[in-house]
Length: 68
Image 1 (cartoon, rainbow, N blue to C red):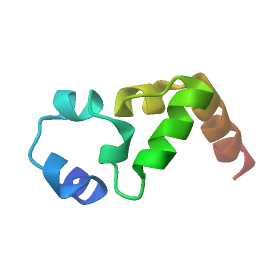
Image 2 (image 1 turned 30 degrees about the vertical axis):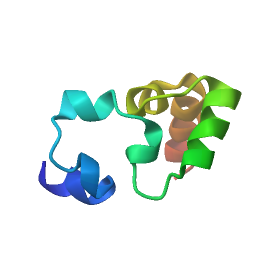
Image 3 (image 1 turned 135 degrees about the horizontal axis):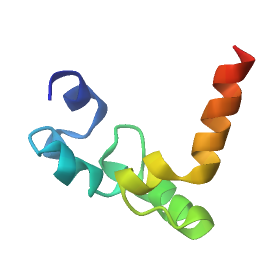
């Protein structure tokens, strides 16, 4: 996984991309269990896939890119 390995906690560095997408968001470096709880409560986000496909996050990313 190369570059992605540096973006996730050690325990998740060797899992496949599909397993990583199904992993909890706190598998990402810098995302705590408390952060994960807030994301789940506010947006129903439980997995990395949920985070990466959330419409609000995608909209915000598109707006930020257009503003560049």
